Amino acid sequence: MERRAVDRGDDQMPVLGILLLLTGSAVAAALLPAFARVVPLAKRKANNDAIGFVYAQVGVVYAVVLAMVVVGVWDARSRAHENTYTETNALLQIAWYSRTLPQPDRGRLGALAKQYTDTVIHKEWPLLGEQRDDAGAWRQFTEIRESINTRQPTTGADQARYQGALEAVAQLGDARRERVDEAATAGVPELLWVALLLGALVTVGFVYLFGMDSVRAHAGVVFSLAFTVGVMLLIVYEFNYPFSGPLKVAPTAFRLALERMRAIA
Image (cartoon, rainbow, N blue to C red; front, side, top):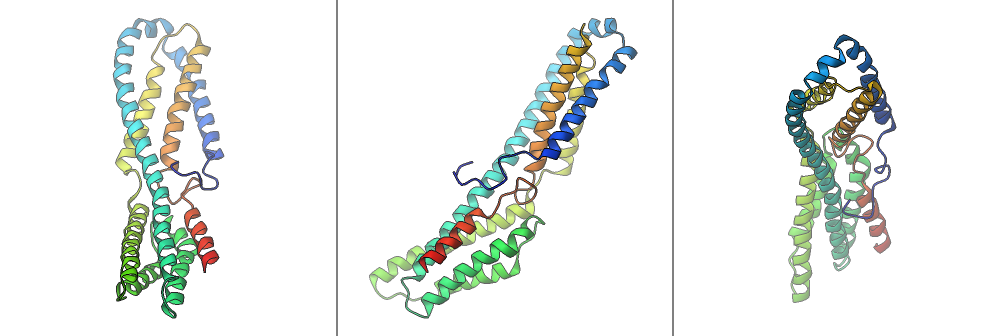
């Protein structure tokens, strides 16, 4: 992660997923003796060179595709996580700007910033997991933007602070739209999922065709390969949607920002 503040619960892979992987890998290894009885060792060993050449090509192609998908979903989640701090940094700048205003504008803008943050945490965040956003949060953001855009600073110091507030509200809007878009459009396409699963079956199934003198060693190879490929697919599955699942991005940045706003109010 780019930040030290790691979301709670994001440092462990789901236990159920690991158990399913271990079970599936064990089943794949357990099927090898039955396959060995159907296809004798002599026939498999005679084709080791040819099968090895083909398997090298298939394995490289699948490994490259799988690696690209893993990196892609990991980067998407990292960007979503980082973007929450970009959004809350803009909120805090607006909260600080509100303290330079006379009443009642000072209280109104500061209250809007806190209300927006609270709405994102308690109302909008659960909706992000459903690839939706909260209309109330959009209204509050619009009020913050209008409250700043309609001001008319007079002195040079006011104008300098006002320019910073304009940049902060623009940053807030950009980060919010990016967060909502990430929640709505993230996810590996279904066709790519089909390709990944079929590729996993072919990659693991090819190992059955090799001839090894030790069935136990051969089963160990099958288990190791199946488990490794399964772990990569599990990573893709868990990071498929940044705002849902046990490894989702949490509203940690907004909670920290809300605490800071209350402290400076």
